[in-house]
Image 1 (spheres, rainbow, N blue to C red):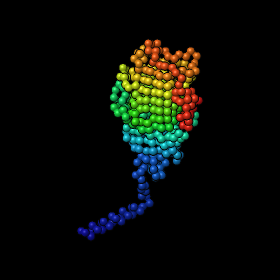
Image 2: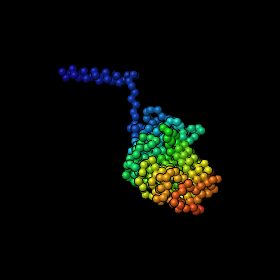
Image 3: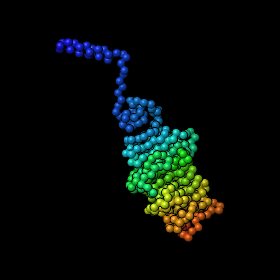
Image 4: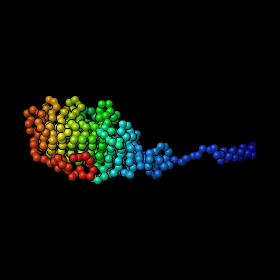
Length: 395
């Protein structure tokens, strides 16, 4: 039996060898494991695509951002990126963007960048080399794309967990010192696309915590608000909002962070709007906002107090070219002023429009604001030095 089995085995090996040498045999292509690691490396054109990696890729000068990020990646400043649709940074994922990077969003494609709870967005711009996220249109206009939506685990009023009113993402929690990353020297342009009768903000902070760093950011010509805070404890410093379609800054649902050095100009509605979508929200710690310039004339109202039950203190506020300094929208808000929940220390109404009124509030707490000569964000109506090199469109 053994000789017979040996012959059968030898015949089988011979047939196999002949088969493998056939010209019709399929070619086996090796694909490196790095093609699936979520990192731009090797000869890839963009993350996990190009070179030895399979699939369609853009040209070498262009990277595509769309879908979901579940790992940590760092973009390359030498690549001009396209944001072709929604791009979500998931829990434990991290998107880092170095100085000089430009990301252009495809208009009308529902493009936006969102950071889920536990995810991080790190923007490392420099004074003369900011990170720019803008429209990819040849002739860009406000509303060409969505904006940046960041969701954290910091407290929000009314409930422990909320759901964003613009995209399906949760926010809020009990971690006041939560972090969602770093934004430093960032300019966001032509955002504010409208979805279901609501507009994106250029940058929206939903329940974002105090260990998130937000310094030197500009919202330029958004169709919606420039920057909006929805609850949370995040602090900001050196903020510019220019020519936005609604409010320059919107403070919603008792944001309890701090703000310093804000230069707000040219927005359609108010420099700062205070409101709450929560019925009878609880009082929180005092919000402290100082060193603010609010510049008209297209921006007609300095501070628009529409609703809410938070406590707010503004210090060193300079305004120029307004028709109304402080607008109080209803009796509930008036009662909050009676309780001392809104205080403006040292505010200047410079160069007002004809028929200017400092405030339409008619209650008894006439000392809720005091007038003085101020320098606002650093240089009254003129550009403060800290805006040099990384901002645009400021007259």
